[in-house]
Length: 132
Image 1 (cartoon, rainbow, N blue to C red):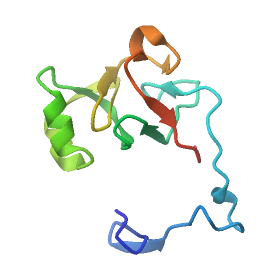
Image 2 (tube, one colour):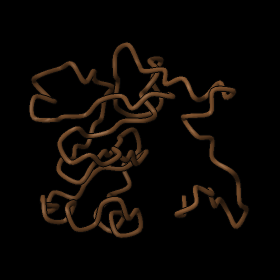
Image 3 (cartoon, rainbow, N blue to C red):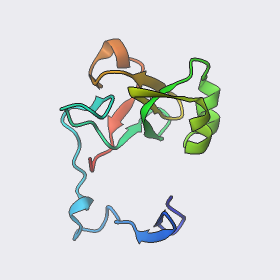
């Protein structure tokens, strides 16, 4: 969790985050995926680790070995993203699946797919946020 001063809290330990304006940092250069792949993590293709929605301007979250309950709705994501504990109540543990969401869109995938696949992602406005 990142607080207002930019400190990252992981397991009770504080860690400094690197600023993207820090020219000395190798992480300051945003390297974007050439082709964005999403899906379960047991693939030979590299999955994009950092995505952002250009529609709602929220980070896209990924839940490994999970799928969304069929009863989720737009308002559920609108009211609960990015709170992982609230989102988790509508996740079903499913081996070999991955659930993704932002504040305005969501999907469950059972196979690796390219974000370029318009038959699946035509309404999604997700893009690689870099530093994958």
